[in-house]
Length: 287
Length: 252
Image (cartoon, rainbow over all chains, first blue to last red):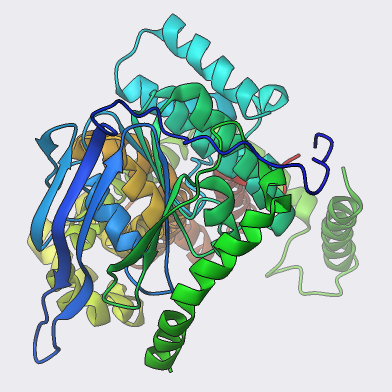
């Protein structure tokens, strides 16, 4: 890790989003989206999400935090087209999303999604090969992605030989190689230890800056959401809705040292203040 | 060679030597048991004489046919059960108790249906092996991590590409267990069937030698069968180890 910023050094407050005079460009829109799982044989239907509305700005880093079981992952699935909305609409780059993952969207899951029968290289190249890119182009992209993720020495290794954090990096590299314009991350660091999480967060920020992609991160970690995001959508207990959307106003150039900024504490406290009651509700409904 | 392997080998050698000694010193009845060295001679002689070649080939080819049929049909059956959960709910208890039924009892029916030729035996082998293959295939398909299937969808893969590139490789270890069991079960069914009611084959010849007090031939045939099945199993084991080396977490 690089040297720590001296405590108290002010961060320059510049909006992270390259906004035009007409306001930020909208990349994806959710309008009154709900997800209700129909009941069967006497079991009641289950209202998992919404109604939720959201305008995802082009190039922003947006995080969704909420109590466990509030439908965060359902929200991501609906956004990705992995799970159909029961009502409302999802628009990505002007085109409705329905039950199919649109071109230009990549998803990284919480669970280890590496393929154990393929080398790290072949894992990273998998998506690009499915997309039918020419092999020299794939090689160039994969080598860049693996170097970026610090996996250069492991290209010919198998996932079984890597740690959990490294395997998750392979998955991120696989998503990166297809050059998505929207990256949907479903708690990709959820299974990792705190220190690895911080480092992975820094890498994610670097990746976000380098690629210019829009990122939507689902997390249950308030710290992570505050550290990484331009905006944080705070969700209520199930069925999840956005209680509030918070702008962090961090500069685009940032890393985990943001945690030393005084405003980090303020923002964290604000998010927690919003979440506390909801988390209690979620806890109550589980027991 | 590690320590366990060396001990195992030593144990086997000691066992054979003890048998040799016991039968040569007539500790055990020499009429019913011959020394292992004479078994080897017996096996060699019956191989050289060529009298048994047809029977050996018949059994091996029957078993091979049964294995191929059981593996192909069992795999398809397993995939079908996976894709049709309702059918599966109906059949599950039947499949679970399948091996409680001594399948050999239907051998006479098979003979009536197909005549006294190799097909009743091959069918018996297939019937004996097919459920093991189907159940293991089903097991393998069920254990494909959900996140891999979600990844397939996130990568916009067609159902066919998903099966070929994700479902199959992910379930391969289980499918392989099914194949190994199919080989074992097919051999058991066919040799046992030949023993009971057949006019040719490995099992028949063993039973024939037994009835004629032809100990060198009987033990020689048994030794050969052991050798064939053992070799086959070892080859499968090696193929499996190669497969697992990549996937196992212990790999370095």
